[in-house]
Length: 275
Image 1 (cartoon, rainbow, N blue to C red):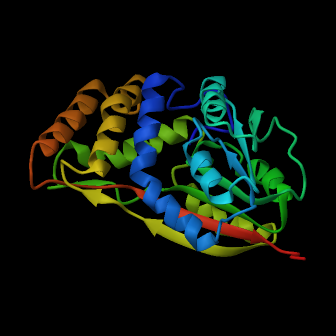
Image 2: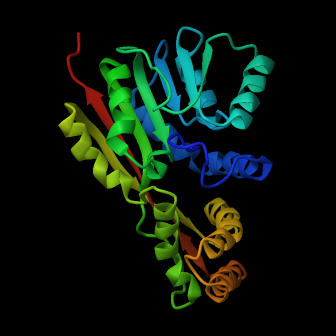
């Protein structure tokens, strides 16, 4: 949700981005809920939410684990961490722990967690194995690392043929310029195998809808802000960026238009040595 490898989160840490993250969570929550259902997340589990941002997923996990379980949030942004602290205080929750920092900066306990969850974080990470190794060690025997992240194919608008057709390449370069990898989900099964985790879920998801759909609104809130950032970074020219946004707005006004999201992959691996 928010970047966990470097403090300069590519998409920003501010009220505008917090509001976008909140809406994003409502759009993708059914996908995440089904993922947790398949993994059997339930009462008493100890969970670590990595790059927890404002804690929207952590709140959902808390509802599942109950007062018998425990939620730990790891987040490098004081802005997001303090926002979630105030939420937990308002709700009177006593079983939420807070770690300010990144995975690489933090000392995580070994053999601790039933579930470590990472959503839209790994695609920003510069050294994926350095990031994952301490997470694997923090799992209890039989514990699960679960990620939702991009394999950045599938993004498109219908009808085709406009300037927006260039957007997938621009976004992939945007992630690359930030030190990340928009295809990170494809790397995870091999890394799980290398570290002795069994792959137990690998489910790609593409959401689609027309101009009045939540998924198109989700995309609108990203592209109308971050296309100019791509221009500023020299990924596309101002003329190209303006043309992509103009094409997007034309599709937004076409009742027969469709938006297809990039692939988001649910990936989960289980640590061996169950006792």
